[in-house]
Image 1 (tube, rainbow over the protein chains, first blue to last red):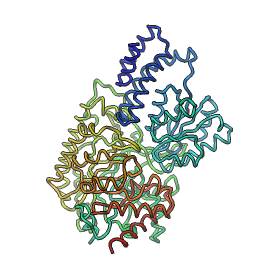
Image 2: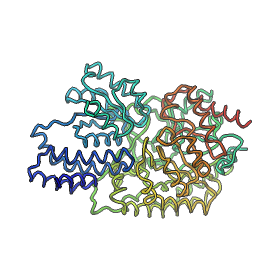
Image 3: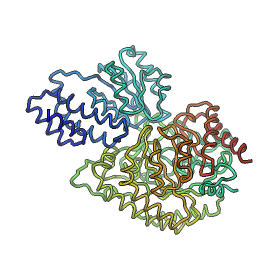
Image 4: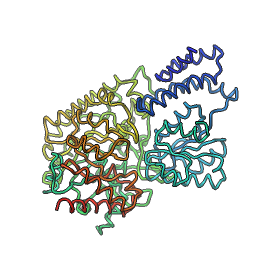
Length: 212
Length: 421
């Protein structure tokens, strides 16, 4: 469908105004919101994710595409909720306590949203109690933690222990990332997965849900 | 060879009597104030509050007695003001949130909220909104984003130029005093004047300004590198003009007392990739770096220092073309940053300043044995044919085990003893 191709192009080019007007046009054509999401935004962000993974585009391009997608999402989000459309999965995400760095975490959240996940973004400097609180409130499949500092990454272990003590560990997968974080560290603290970059984080999230 | 000769020999890609060492010569080769104190204690030096010369990353001053224990060959000529826009003067005692007594500038004004987070004010002015925040269990500040709504139709490049001003009479006086202090130093003098880094994302939010205007939010800045290139060119063009005029005045005062000028800390690399393509580097940044570096090479004896974290192997030839003499910090844990490959491909054209030990992993979390092995290996690779100044990959982080710090220092000494004596 031509309009879907145009939405995909709008997302790829980071043209928020175009995505917004095309979305409105598509809705007038009675195209379901879920199709606009999956065949338009997700398809566009999928291309962006691949190009980013292959170093053909960089963070600024991802940011403008995510911003364009968000412009459209504002229109269709209430419609998705009304029609009870379930997201691919729900991810609680945050940068851990003591760490205010959130760019990496935000890019992961954008790409996950672009892959059809619902994101509960707790922000930065998030204490273990807050992660637990969000987990109790939301039926999330995944918790994503980020840290940029060698002094804060160790806090991820405390979060996992807190989740475990509250008997949530088997209900939720834990994925981690951030500059100093490694697979060895993820293994050590018993996280379910580690992603070295934002595009791989999407693949990881899908595989944790058994959707890859 | 004295320390200055040692560094200068290495900067000329010749082999000095031993590998030169820098710590605290710049704000990207520093040691966190906690670790400075740890080292003072280890070496049995007088225990007194350490000065925090760089309040953003809480870097501690390395006084002459400790510098001698570590074997440091550099000395800093700091910019007149810190990243929070105040001068380091009239040192006063301060107890950090982690309970360490340190010395800070009298303008280091903070307030603690009920969560224990510490907020710091630009220019020490508590009437302005705070520009930095240290979480209650943190060890450094991060900038607070103060972005006013962006109106694309009415963006004015002047708003992003507020911080790029001609050096003031006070600044020039400061440099005269610094020149006097450093003129007979037998160490290599490393300095910076600020305003020569284009688009450094740490400086975009302007933690030194009371009420920053223009584009100050990090995401918006990165978006601007694609969507508002004309605006950025205008900012960089005017910033460059101011910087060149300032360099001239600075040079008139410090002349050959300075050996190395810290030009730029703009990071182009991430752990596995980069923030932009090399084509964008060439079109958006390189023209201005070339103007700065060309002026320096034409008019001074200084070598130019470029810092960029991350995976920047493919940027190296572009840094060379832009006229940089020195690259730091050589984050070899990032993708494509193989030490041997870097040395073979670029080592004859770029001086490697750093790269001696990884701070993200080995130094912070390894064993002393692993630290020793990594330092010895890096020294072996990077010191061939000169062109290497030992330092860690970026600042030494808080909570680094003492044994690892000592293992690092001892390993450099061991290598030098083995190789050069």
